[in-house]
Amino acid sequence: MKAFHLDAASLDELIQSNDHPLQKELLLHHLEGCAVCGPVGAHLVEARRAGRLPRLYSSVEAGLAKSLHEAPALWRKLEPFSPGRRRGLVQDTDRFLSWGLCELLCRKSETTAAHDASEAVDLAELAVLIAERLRPSRSVEEAWLQELRALAWAHLGNARRVLGELRSAEEAFEAAAALWEKGASEIADALGFGPVILDLLASLRRAQRRFDDALLLIDQAVLAWLHGPEETRDLHLAGQALISKAYTFDQMGEPERALETLREAAPLVDCDRDPRLLLCVRHNLLDTLSKTGRYDEAAALLPEVEALSRETGSALDVLRLRWAEGRIAAGRGEAGRAEGLLEEVRREFSEREMGYDAALASLELAALYADQGRTAELRALAWKLPPLFRSRDVHREALAALTLFHQAAAKETATLEMIRSLGSYLTRARQDPGLKWEGSCNGRSRGPQGG
Image (cartoon, rainbow, N blue to C red):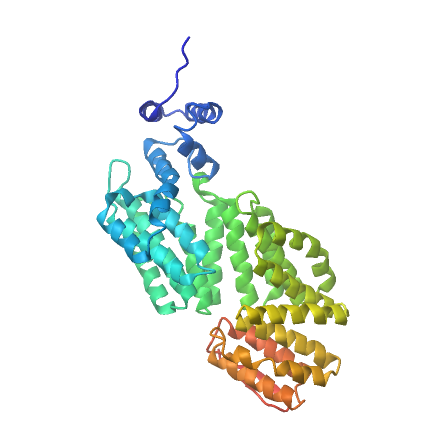
């Protein structure tokens, strides 16, 4: 008997003609096992593995799955062009009016933001343009489009936040909230975008130093991902949000709560889905332990985090691990090893023109010298600071504090207390440029003022 295989038309007919969950599951099972039919329904299999396809999926969910599956090919056609040319193509060419491409651009904007905030803004603006141009169809209702538009605007707000444009970021999230209200009033959170938007907004609230609001938003997102409707639950994203919550506690100066939250996040992270996220959890845990004086616990994590850094991380991840390793060595009394590691880290941050990190590493090295009464080395280190003063990422208030340290070290009046207090201030001021420092060159300091 001649074998029967599915084409696009017969697959769509099968999806529309039955509404029994078992039949839907059998169809997916067949698509996974048949080399001929598999490519025809690859979008369904891919969506199920990503948790984007409900058990009783309709032609609507199947259509969205296909759009998501085809999005990378559309992006490859757009990617070589400048941001302006990309916008022109989307504006003038209907072939790029794709739901899946819009979602893909949102994800790319979020992942790009950490290393290129301007590109992240361009990607999110393109997602907004696509979402605004999309129109309702047989498979996509207007309410669904409102929620997609809210998602795109939220990602634009996130990219603007990373760029430091907090006011325009707030405006983007206000636009997202208005769109979300229109869609959710009809279909609730049918697409599972709600907690994603809450998590992104929490990052803005943290940047605005509105910590209580940030924690509330993250808790709402985690609750939705852990206990929401079955088709929108996502343990991995809940773990990711908990990492953000731990970072919020860290910014609040509550390391013990940060440690507790990181331990809560670890078992939720899916290593296969995002190997780098596991690195983030383990590295942040090690780093926080090292900063709270729990050096032996931190040292026990070093082999695992080093292996993860080399497998899934970047050269910068390895450098930051060396920084924590130097801190651990100093805390365990291994002064020579700590000095070598911290000097290496300070020098490489300087070469990378990462002024703020170079300054913080310099202060840790200075604390080591001060603790040993090595005023000559402390003075020599101070002479290496002026190039950092020209760094673009060291803001005015931090610059004033570093100048104070430079003067005190040159006069051999910098004390261990002053250095540690200044390091604590710079850590806080990194996320709060308006935070002022008041101190004196005689080694006595009053610490951060205002906020």
